[in-house]
Structure formats: structure tokens, C-alpha cells
Amino acid sequence: MKKSITAIALAASSTSAFAMIEPNDGAERKTYCVSTYEADDGSQYVSQCDETENNKRENRPLLQNGCAEGQAAIGGVKRRSEKKFDIEISACLPPNVVQL
Image 1 (cartoon, rainbow, N blue to C red):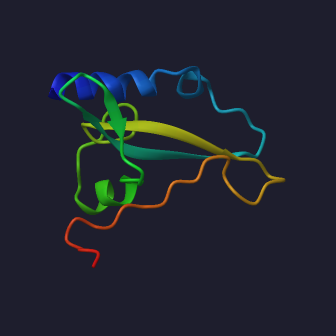
Image 2: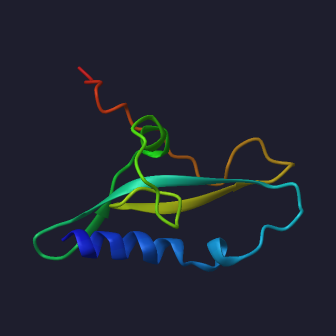
């Protein structure tokens, strides 16, 4: 299962958006890291929160896509004229926090 999750994360990072050289258009780019899961029937899922801050806090080793093992990278862009990123994903709670 670990190999298939890593393959998903690497496949997500190999899109053309990650392969392009960043143009000098003043756009701000952000990478969201979402955990990936595989069900018993082989269907694949991603979490609904961004693990980027938890990766930093936990000093997790990052792969080429900028995310830890078992995570897929999603790229967001915010142009100068825009106030928000085109994709917004809320941060995950820290691992030691429990939501009541």
C-alpha cells in the first residue's frame, strides 16, 4: 500500500504546473499537501486539510513534490489582481490537538 500511495503523490507532482519554470508575472504560488488513502477495493482518496504546517512542525522529510511520503501536492496560484488563491484548503490540526 505504501508504494501505491507514494506513486499517487509522485504522479500528482509530475503535472505540467510543477514542471514549468515560474514566469515572472508577479503571481504567488502555494503548494498544499493532502494525505492520500487507498480503500480495500483500490479506490483512492485524499484528505480535506493541508498538512504543510504539520510537515514543518514534525520535521517530516519532504519528497520532490514538496510534501511528505503518503501525501499528494496540489498547486494554487494567486495573481497580483486577486485577493485569494484559486484553490484554498484549510490547515490540518496539529497531531497533538483533539477537536471536541
